[in-house]
Image 1 (cartoon, one colour):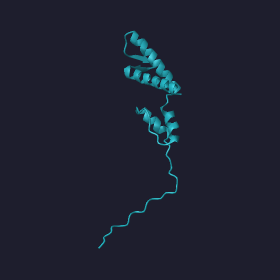
Image 2 (cartoon, rainbow, N blue to C red):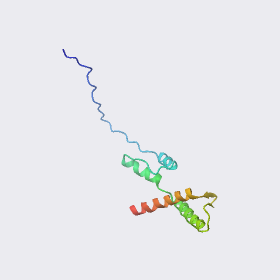
Image 3 (cartoon, one colour):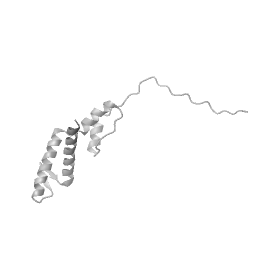
Image 4 (cartoon, helix red, strand yellow):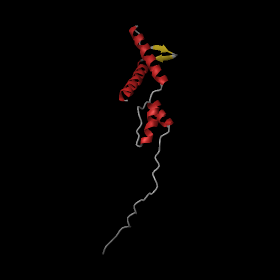
Length: 111
């Protein structure tokens, strides 16, 4: 006597192309705002949008330079916090500005 279970499920056949989701720039920008330093891409068209979102703008670069320069001057004068353009600047803000400038330098070296 031979017992057999149910027949195997036929394999799935899909003749249609799989749609590739390209993340919106809003998604990548939001990730950056939350402190992420990048976003995973699995398809080439995603790379440009993600790179654009995580590349500092000219305004961000200029502000970072001003923060670092002003804070270095303040440290020489014995201060560990300053006000710049109405913003309170202390070490965490300076470290973020330094990371921005490091990213700009690294990007320039890579190209």
